[in-house]
Image (tube, rainbow, N blue to C red; front, side, top):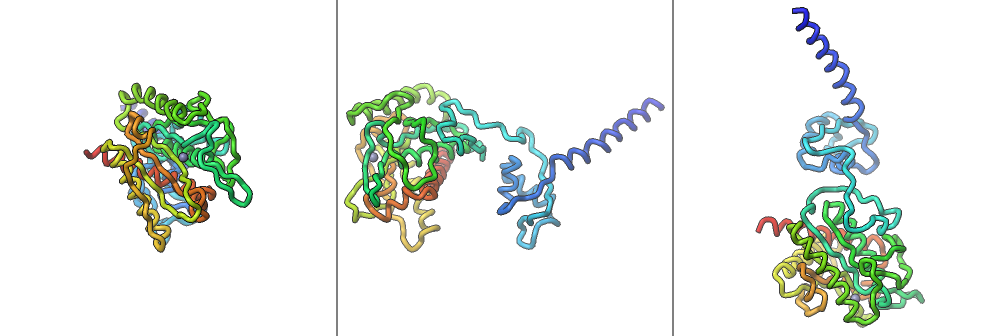
Length: 340
Ligand SMILES: [Zn+2]
């Protein structure tokens, strides 16, 4: 009898002391400026949509009339589900050093695991001795390869945040993601560390061989593998164009180009409805998409000679938006592949 009583006393002490402490220490927080329920929960690594329901349950009387968060109000954070952790595990970099993104962007946030079975080869056009298309803007020389590279880095970082394995085929150790209008021109990019040859065919062969060699092993590890080449077009300066998605005759390449184009169409309808989007999906016999072993597309993001198109590449928000939309396109294409 006495023994039992003692144990009961012990348990009640533990319950009394530990539960209130843990609630107070970890499970409540104030929102920050601009927070919605999703962004608040994401910061606490509660990514699943079921957390939103739990959050609303827990905080029903603390939400404002619109069901949103109020600054200065403390909110209960739903307990972690089994398998989830806080702080989140850092993204593992197996393919390149995140310093490539530059110091301001080297920490890659983890948004989800959506693409954890996916592998991407991101190739920015040209590089090394070849600047690609060149245009003059108020006496400043703009080089295609620098802009394509910046978009490629932003896309790589986005995909990693969704759990993907990513290769940057073309790399520049000095230039991370750059929030500038005018990106400095240089010639020291490499193809996975190797100097880029001068001749066009040698240059293309080098990157195709590099990707195909990686693909031989990667295809055993991933469900979904895709390559993307990013370019800026050069046409007559009067010609304003939309984003072009070129595919090969591979059905997976065709599906990806269409899905990407659909996402861009939706985004243009949302942000520039007066304008309309005439993004073009087309088959073209381009060396890289013909020879990459993983299904691939080649994107031309605008005409570097045209004033209007140029805004799409020189404004960093636009470069980020394009990377974001390409990310959405990849997620959609990946999900379409799962359901097949
Ligand atoms: Zn190009």
